[in-house]
Length: 254
Image (cartoon, rainbow, N blue to C red; front, side, top):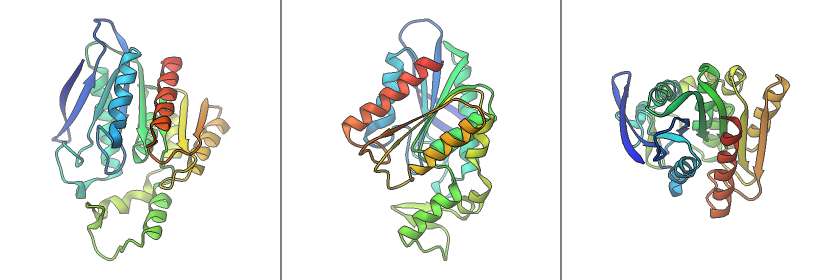
């Protein structure tokens, strides 16, 4: 079953879709966190396909729009990473309270900047038992500075407009204070990192860093490099591989 779900964080409304298996049993659950300028569906309906694949495998799944994105309340200009981390923690609580969800078996998956958010949420919440990071941002300040430099983005005045989205000053000001690769070291479960060798948005080196940091601290981490894949696994074969790896991981670890 796929049903719309509405909940609030800091007084603002968030819109999501809850996927649940048709039986009346209790199931493990997975929370999906979209990327910057993305949505609960993501490009080429990546999150829709992932959620349905997970649901077919016996998982409940919640995908939603962060505040200030897509159908949720707010203006994108007010989007911040700390705000999205707060939304992720709230959505995790909402998912754990759903009928049929086993609160002891909850996983989280984030794409791109959503991977950064997922790393922080996994580190802050004891409810996350397994994590998947797809093409994750690892050093927000450096990663966005590289994009600014490569695209010759003028930072003289705010909001800064890129591809029809207006980024506010607060977003850039807090980037140096967000450290996902430190926060994920507090996670309660294993981590899978998946990236494409042809990712031009976030360097595959970030995924290597996540793996090295986690393993150096004695935490289980597996890394999958999909040859030829871009940032969001756009080609149908790369998409299939990323989804299959995520489903496999959650089946093994939840």
